[in-house]
Amino acid sequence: GQVSFRVTRPQFNMLINDPEVERLLDDLDIAMADRSELFDVLDADGDGNLEVGEVTKGLLKLRGSAEKSDVVACLLAIHNLQSMFVGFQEELQEIMEAVDARMSHEK
Image 1 (tube, helix red, strand yellow):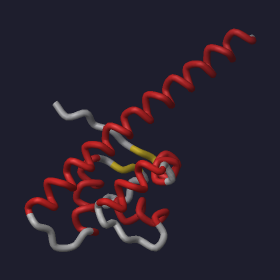
Image 2 (cartoon, helix red, strand yellow; image 1 turned 180 degrees about the horizontal axis):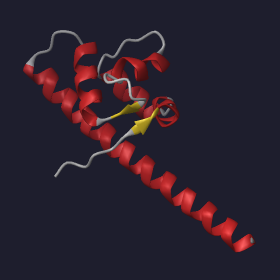
Image 3 (cartoon, rainbow, N blue to C red; image 1 turned 135 degrees about the horizontal axis):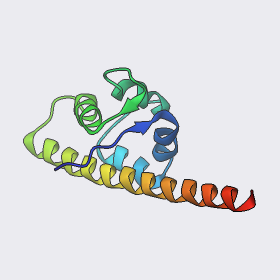
Image 4 (cartoon, rainbow, N blue to C red; image 1 turned 135 degrees about the vertical axis):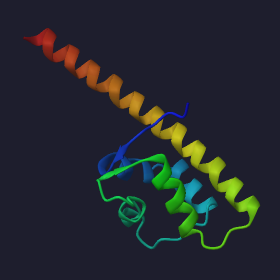
């Protein structure tokens, strides 16, 4: 099945400042003057987290009218973003585990 992931605002803000993510947003023609507002635009249900569906639907809407090839390109780019989010979450988990291990070792 599809991996479900949730991204919080702080995680999202770190990700959208990544040069690779900025390039992806440029490639998708996501023209927002302030990309920090993108989280609020994409957070359709307002729960403070982004899920795959919200990102997909939101980015497609931001692009305006789309040809079929645009939709395919957008979905491929979103799949790439999803992989980056998962990698980011795994890195974060490793860091948290290392911090926990160091803290319990110091007690």
